[in-house]
Image: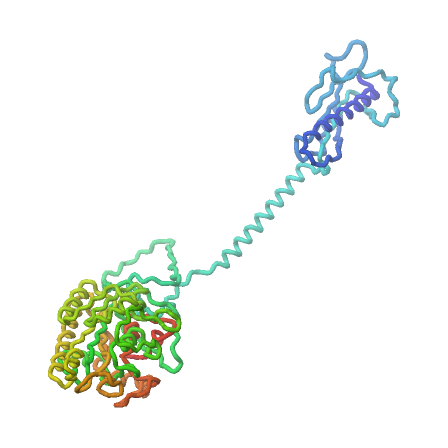
Length: 545
């Protein structure tokens, strides 16, 4: 049996061993790390016999920081026979050899009052265990630490679930209101133009899957509607900005093709052929429209037709091709025009001209095909073949016959050759009617605009822009939804809520709002359902219903 004083001696020895072990462990830490105080935490002793088994009341934050030192008596097999006391020392579960321990001195060498000694009040064999910790200033019982961690994890999960729930409630549902269709869609809900491309993001259509499949009898008598093929035009989505003094535009039925015809030098009082009569009876016309106020020449008036601008706006007074592009002299930028507008929205364009100077339009604007042919019969034949095959979105056809006849020897409109030329133009118009009716894709999907650049004097030319025979011109349109036989001036007069004044036989001023040939390109855009945010193409003030 080991005496209490001997056990106290060994405890002192073990305290020294523990301090040395902690010193070696602290040397393994990174350079620059502040050396923390070494702590020695004593645990409850593990006492045998009637005291039962004790458990440690402290724990290190990391297992490798704990040094366990045990002191126990040697068993009977290893006890020395000379009566001296011996013990067995264990560090971290490893039993030290005898060479690592010192023999205990006799009982007489101990001081009963040694503070490092500790007597066993119960007597008997005793095993003492120390748990030494380094870098550990806080000791938390392991079960309580685990419970705290679990509580924190649970609170985090609850907070995360609350955040997800709030985000889900803030998500806006998809918009399915069909009333928000774009303005360029007709009332039946079908897009005006197939394969339309929008600049704004389309409204998503939610897909709803039923939870159960109800037994429904399918509708078998629903009609199958096959839409007419149309070119891919992307409507301009800029918000319209109409002038305050002008009435809102009344849309007609939209079409996919517009044929703009100019019969050069056509006087309205000579429009007596069968096809001109058909145009007037099936379409909406006025025989009292006006040219540009400043000129009755060909090129300046055609620029106005394609741009919607007056000569004061585009400032091009010359009647010949300059060889350059048409640009704004102030800004250096090109003019907005019907060709570019149609091309920018995915359509196709063409010009069939009987005057060579019309090449200035091909040079300046987006024209897919430009054809110049002096022989008008051949020009019209090429147009009819190409239109039947390629079906341009916007096609311009220039028929020079009356102008050419009036200029020859300055015979003017009173010469029979002029009347013959007008009759030829009437026959060409009849061929265009036949083309539209024979082509299923053009039928009921094509509009015609017919006007001229100037009239003609009885004898002479059309240079005098103050002469009624020169500035009074026809302006007609034909297509689905048009008021058949309607008078455009009457339909748009102030008495009927419009903005147009009847010029009578006067020249009127440039500021007077009358029907002029410069509205032709704007009318074409109106037929397509295209409208810009500002400028002439935004001010679509004529109605033809």
